[in-house]
Amino acid sequence: MIKMHVYEPIRILCKKYPVTAYCLITFLITWGLKYVYALVKVGNNLPYFNFSLIAQYGPSLSAVFLIAITEGREGLHRTVQSMFNWRVGTWWILMALAFEPVMFLTITILYWFWHGGFPATDSFTIVSGILSFSGIFLIGLIRWGLAEEIGWRGWMFPKLQDSISPFKATMILAFVTTLWHVHPNSLSEIASIKEGTYLLGYFPEVVERLIITIPITLLITFIYNNTKGSLLLMMIFHSASNTSYFWIDETFGIVKSDFFRTSFLLALIVLAIVFSILVINQKNKLLTTVRR
Image (cartoon, rainbow, N blue to C red):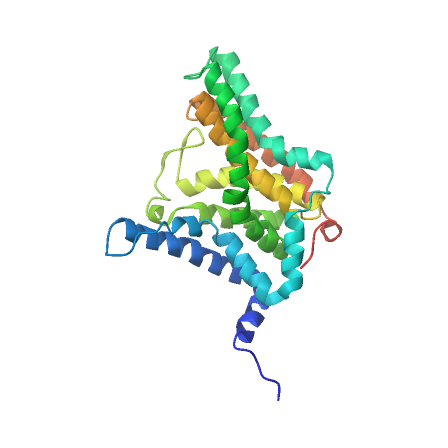
């Protein structure tokens, strides 16, 4: 008689419903730890620890767990290889590294032409900002890239693409990542219409995030499917994206201006149109992605 390991039913369920299992575990880790951290901050005689530091790694932690129990060492080894896969072509590396920094810098230059200057900056701030960009980017590879991309693009997206088109998979992923980024303590406010933080206009928080996430996720899908699922490029793109936005904010102080937010919205519309067409045309996904 064959003995069944204790975790075998869990493994079977995770293999049968990989996306559902992933979403449940990811949200449980991230939102659960953020709730615990909220309790720690308000007292309740709990020992202090910044649980949000672990919570932000929810997407990748859950993916590592699922890969380990469903694919074993081979799956973990393949994932690590993808995290160091830089043999994808110079063009794609440059695109992942520079696309959003160039986009934000273009908006910044247009702001300068339009207004003839910036709210608060000087030559020293610009020079020191350039030096700090590299440091923030390197930290971001761990803080943002490693924390999320093993999950979003290392597990969830390939599983979605196994059964549906790249475009549909991208839409689902964009929706899930949007919800994941909404803070649990803001759940009562996500439907409240208020002035946007990133876009000019008044939106519920979840709508504003979705407007931003869909075009960027389409762009990432285009890069991912053309580099055979290189997680390294996904981590680079993620870090460069966040770093460039924070750097522009710190150095030039324009990201809260109406000009920047309007320009960003227009850029997102263009990205959505262009990369929707490109991703919809990625029909031969089985030859370009790493199947699991």
